[in-house]
Each structure stands twice: as structure tokens, then as C-alpha cells.
Length: 136
Image (cartoon, rainbow, N blue to C red):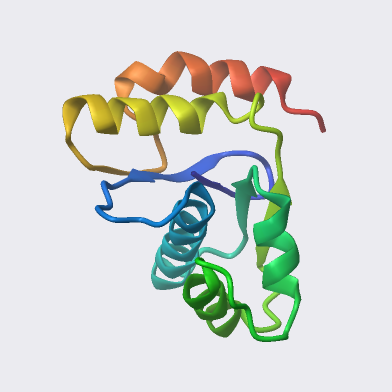
């Protein structure tokens, strides 16, 4: 899920990956994809919500990353450089309900999805709840 600075959903996207080594690596893959799509779409501001502080910290650290997600984090670093229009924001797992719904439905249906400026119908209610609960 990627949003702009006023909280509007720019992109909701999920895909199925085989053989991912860890949840940490899966989160890094998702972040890399959000960065890639945001750059391709030339979005003026992108806020990528991540429930892993480790991803955010490792992205800021310029030393070589030897974790299972190291190659993905390095790619994120290369793509974002010193860009100020791509922001990684930590969010708690409990606040990440919309992303959880998208991931769960993708696995259940064994179907990948890609929506620009919206979410699938089954997640619309949670999007509205998040909008109301999002602090200014």
C-alpha cells in the first residue's frame, strides 16, 4: 500500500512470491516494489507504510547489509538515493489491518491484484476505517 501526503491511497498491490526466506525478506520485497511503481508512475510524494522498523533502519544505513533481505534493501537504497519524495513510515502491525486484508485475500484466492488510486471492494470498508482513524 502506498499513500500520498494527505493519506489518499495511490496504489494497492499484492503478489504471490514462492520461496521467500522470511517475513522480513517479504516485507523488503513489498517495499522495493512500492518504490519501483512510485518512481515509474512519477508520484510527487509517496509514503510507504512498513510495520518493520528493521527495514526502515537498514534502508538508512549505508553499510553492506548481509541479512536475508540485503539485496532488496540495497536495491531500495539505490532507487531512492537522497529522494525526499519517498518516505518510509513505521506503522504498528495492528494498525496495518488494510494491508493484512489484502495479503490474506491474495493468498485465499491465489490471485494477485494491482489497483491504482483504490483498493478492491472487499477492502473498501477497512480503507474508510483507516481514513477516519489516521491522525493528522
